[in-house]
Length: 168
Ligand code: S3P
Image (cartoon, rainbow, N blue to C red; front, side, top):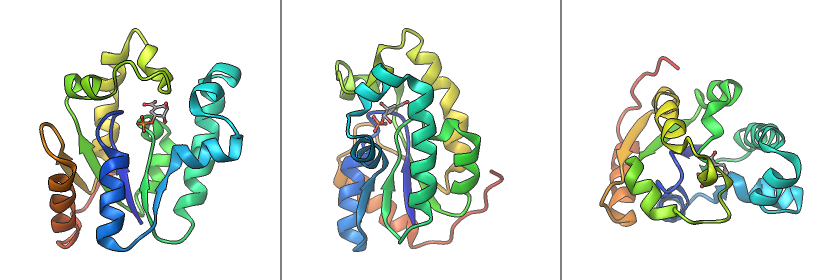
């Protein structure tokens, strides 16, 4: 299982699709699975049931997917805030797509489908998540100013080499 983590706008879905083609593995977007199961988009789940309900569904969904057949799996930007999810990720190859805050906002700013973008403390949310991304990452790849194909090539190269140890 190859898991992609990183903040909104890091390119997890775009890079994940390319990577799945390169590796011959299916691509799964955890948010798309949550939406399919709920029958509603993420923004409606947040609006109708609140962030906590979304986070609970997010953890359950990811736990199930990590137990399933190998795939390239892209997680929503907040998934790593759940300590239980972080623990499960210790068994996977986890690629952290790093994006600078201003780059992330430039890519996704104004997207109504991303309720977290309305948070007035978004810079703090970003800063607080960095340690969690790093804790689960077996590889960290910068995406700032890079084409998705270039990022993908970088990841394929790194996956071919030994996986460095993690502390969790
Ligand atoms: C979220 C990121 C979104 C989605 C939800 C919450 C977050 O996924 O899971 O809107 O908390 O950062 P992307 O990172 O794919 O935008």
